Image 1 (cartoon, rainbow, N blue to C red):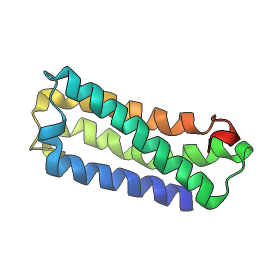
Image 2: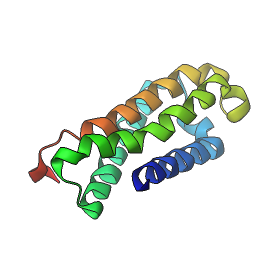
Image 3: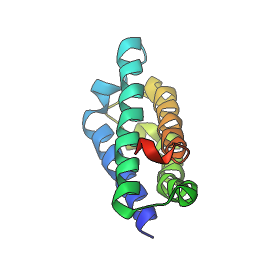
Length: 122
């Protein structure tokens, strides 16, 4: 339950952030900004999730399950965010929906990839 809660919290914070400042972050015409956002997402997920592994002393064999439980709430909830993008994020240009969806897939993939890092890299 703890990992599901952490996943929900990550989703909630990210959703609130995009609701508040998403119009400055999601600009499909600005390739450099988009690349930076994808890199920042990867780094953020790596720091947060490996920090959770360290905090909870998650053994390497248990990391895939923990990563799945962390990613799952956001993956399920972001279905609604993508389907109802203009209503959830009225501050963001609707044409940024595809960029947002790609970023979400990238972020959740980043969470899952952390489960396969060697133990000595944490």
